[in-house]
Image (cartoon, rainbow, N blue to C red; front, side, top):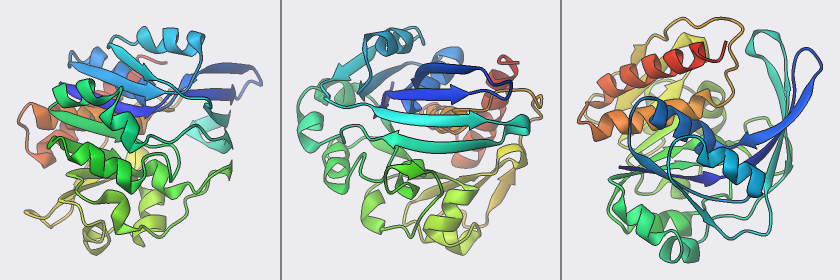
Length: 272
């Protein structure tokens, strides 16, 4: 079983046609949909949001554990044609703490074979919390998008990476822009600088790269074609979750990237 740890997010969205909506977002929403949609077992471990958002999250097909929080992360998105977007962090939530991990979240995390961490900003899951998670001895797959976001304001990846942010992590995923900011590039030398055994870099329609300490030559896995009109919000969260699930099923990292890439494309086609 996979535990999905991440903030429940209030997404305030303006679509290309000018219509606006508020919906439940964040890594757990999209990751849970991906796991449930592909028949994988998991549990969501989250904080933030309100009753309506929690109800939406519960409809994604996985059990949900919600911890106490006095604040909710707020994301503002202006979606444009061809998948382009403007993105702003309007408010931060409450970070996950070692007390959360040792308290209300403990039993769910202990039951998981793999813990997927989806961050929203740099201090979302700080090093001391990651250390508490690693103490369970489970595989940890980390989505690094939050590490490139220092705080409130327009979202533009900012680095460099502090290795302490990823201590003990088994696999980490960056977008290409995040890798450029945090690692100083997207080649094998940059991927090695993450200090993690398995490093993934996604390139949107260009596919995904995988590097491992055992196989340090970078492999590019091409992406399946998806329709231009597909809503790609959350695709990275889906990819990370499906990659973790493939590892859980015994696939090697390179095969797991191919499985995740194909799975994301199939899920995005359903959105058109």
